Length: 295
Ligand SMILES: [Zn+2]
Image (cartoon, rainbow, N blue to C red; front, side, top):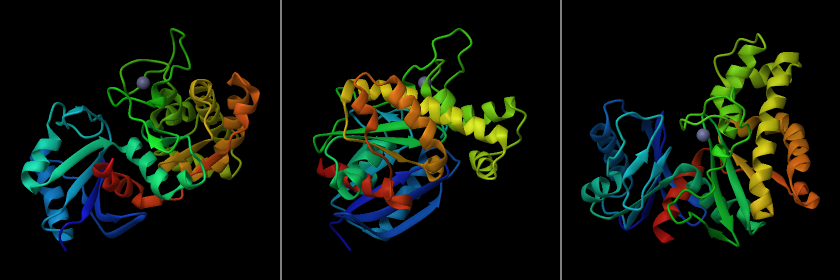
């Protein structure tokens, strides 16, 4: 195969890649993310891609962090050693084609626009729920990255400005992510006396009806509703879409999230918008990334 568009989802634990055609991903391949720093990661990506297409037309890469307009990594909190690394130019030189790098939540929004809820809704925000809380924004069927590429960073909307607000991965305190991300969720559960290694344990306990787990899950839902109400005040969107690992438990979060959303929006009807869960699953990042070069 030659001349195809390839999408790469560079995650903290796995790298996935596939050929992207319209709403489809073909030949999905993956490998564990190497721990040996940038050159080991570039080797792994190059190897995955050469199995898919030896002469690709263009490549898009989703990264779990932030990148500047020149494809240089600004922040990659969960994969050490990448700060300032010009991943775009490096990969472009190795692969011999154009390479476009974007934040993974932005790619999730692009995937949703092409193959997901973007088919029924013109303006929506995709909130990716996981270790961090990311966001991607589509307005009137167009992905909006903003002047510096930081549009829709909803995880860092301030929801608590008190002096004992919880710390966020971004270095500030009181961000929505500090309460709704994995770390905040586990901290809240621990403070209630619960024991859990990962969010899934807390959601399972909540499903069984455990009081502490239910209280933690309610607090996460409330944090998300409070933060997203601020975005909704600015944007008056058609829908909010949830993606990422924690979105699998969205049914447990929904009631509190909706209650906080309707409590905090400015125009009451804007709190009634559909709350949707992405149906793109495992391939979402690769799909969105593969469409980056076409933007
Ligand atoms: Zn933050």
